[in-house]
Image (cartoon, rainbow, N blue to C red):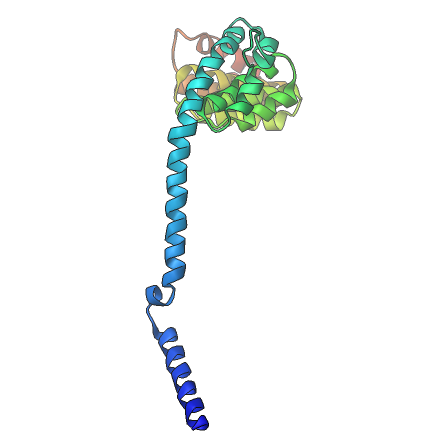
Length: 230
């Protein structure tokens, strides 16, 4: 009897193993799939709660707090804009950290970077500008251009040239793109790279033929200075 019982048990185990191997994916991993789906749902619900219950209120609070710092920035009081304008209001450094993950916290990185750039603290400027997540048709160009200025001041000219090129390519806005093409040409000229300088100037003249633009009116002077007869 005992032997027969063992045989039946072995047959049962073998049948179960065959069923497991041949079972559809859902049936075989039903528990794991349900756990995974539950985890995904929990993440989705958690993200929704985070956005609606935390980020949105934080954004409103941040915008209210930013007003004084922006006021200092517009007055060229860059140190106060960074460290705090007084009256219990935060500066852009604290705002970027305190409201990280909100649009207001993000734009505070840009304001902080430009403020440090104006104060000549170029490493700090680069740190905050690189943390700024720029989108749209204007802001990426402004970010690249400010970074180009910071690296140019650090005399890291190859990096600055690359960033000015990116700034000019990042937007179709005439004012911004022509400004960065001009900076690109001037920096090439400063380095003695006359051919590259002329290409940048001629691109400005060709792509933005605005007779009212100061950059356009001066372009012939820049081309001549770069050693071209064109």
